[in-house]
Each structure stands twice: as structure tokens, then as C-alpha cells.
Length: 178
Image (cartoon, rainbow, N blue to C red; front, side):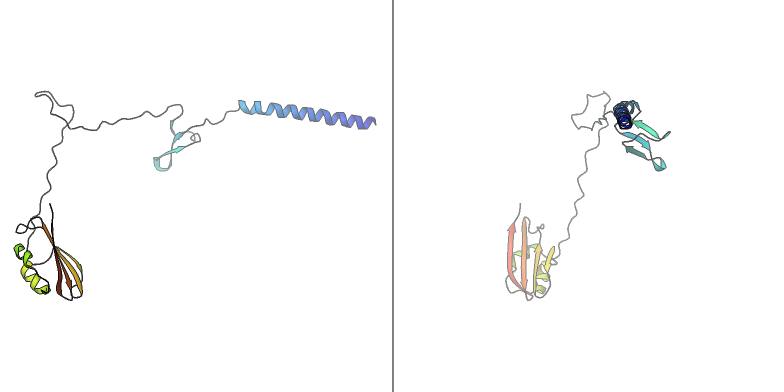
């Protein structure tokens, strides 16, 4: 029985020592240097910056954003306002006002006044001869088509839409636009 008690005492001592070592392990681990949480700006391949959560390798650190946080940059946008006092230098460079887009003068073939005289039953050829080519077409020539003539100097503020069926006028719609 003495041997049994001696073995039990040894096992008990070993268990106590093991527990003591386990209790000390976190304290020892806490003293070990750990990487600081945060974002690190490091030198990547070909000199491009890389942002990562681990410290940079030696010589590759561009910026520690935890120790040296980024500052906010505000870029002032130019504001157009009344001109500065005469003789005083302007703090901002004023831009010239935008130019109006160049307007194209649309060539109108045919007589826009004839748009009023298109009637059902006229052929596509007759319409082309009187009005000229349409501004917008939809459908195919022959079976069904729709031609649209936009406002022109001889017929201002009016959009004329002509429907064709089997090569003949099947309907004319004139819409006033402003």
C-alpha cells in the first residue's frame, strides 16, 4: 500500500505542477510581443502600396496607420459667384462660361407646307416627291411603315407622322409641339 500512496502522491504533485504551469502560461504569453491591431501600409510588388492587417516586413513599411492615422483632405471646389472687387486680384481662377452648342441647320428636302396636304391612299412615291425623305422611319417599305417629319421652318412646332400599309398612306397624324 505504501507503493500505491507514493504513486498517488507523485501523481498529485505532477497535477498541481501542471495546473500551476497552465495558470502561468497566459501571463507569460501576454508579455510576449503581439502584432498591434490596425492597418499597415506596406510596399508591395513593383512599389505599389498594399494595405494589410499585419505589420510590414522589415524595410517595407510605408505608414503605420494606427500610430500615424491619415488626415482628412478637403479640396475646395471653385464656386461661381459675383466678380471680385475691381482691381483686387481674384483668389480663384474664374472659368469662362460654357459655349452654347453649335446648332446644325437641318436640310429639309421637299416643301414642309405640303405636309398639310397628305391624304389617305397616296403612294410612298407621291409622299417622297412632295415632302422629301422623312426624318425618322420605322418598319419596312412596302407592307407597313411609319414615317415621321419633325418641325421645320415651313411647318414649325408640328410633328407629322404618316402610316403606310401596302405602300399607301393609311393614316396621317399631326401633333403640335411647343
